[in-house]
Length: 240
Image (cartoon, rainbow, N blue to C red; front, side, top):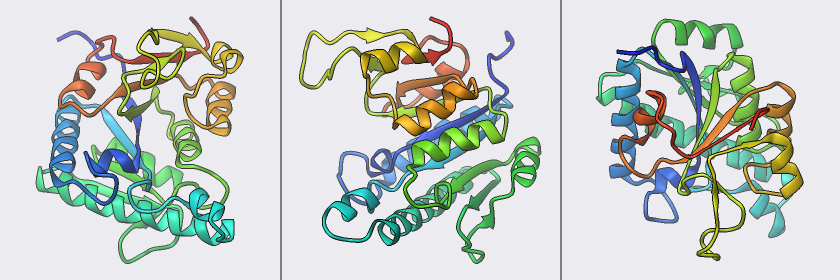
């Protein structure tokens, strides 16, 4: 088998991904599919960290817009990511993967505190590491947490698994003639005001030269094909 393009990756999963076709909660079939994907990646010998969102449970920013104070609303969102991390751990461990949850908030009964050196050690030992509670700070999204953790663990690439198969020149759900980019630079994303992830996260990746790939992860096997080198989704980097 030819050499794999990546040794260590950080995968960002939105809460909506875990909800499957529903808008709320957890879909057991989707969790099963994701856990099987992760098992296949682990069997390749790739070190894998995961950031989970909480949009299927609670959105701090949305709640703040409806009258809650932003700080407690964001803390509730962080706790939602812990719930999702526990669910993902349960399904992955049923498939034989050794998994650790590391949380940016103190929830010692269900997760380890996030410590960079310990996280890297878990990865080196072949454990799947699920990063929960975002950055541990309000006002920052899980996209930003993904960019931060990808840099901290020296990931070769940040993968964002979504329901859309890449970055388009305009919204493909509204415009049938929307064109998908196979590759695009950070600067081009900014100039064209394309929605890749929130600006703080995107700028962090750009400043720290972390390439990212946006792809559709709703179908089984795409993650495996991508990590074997297949050109799937859109690659965003400092080179076109």
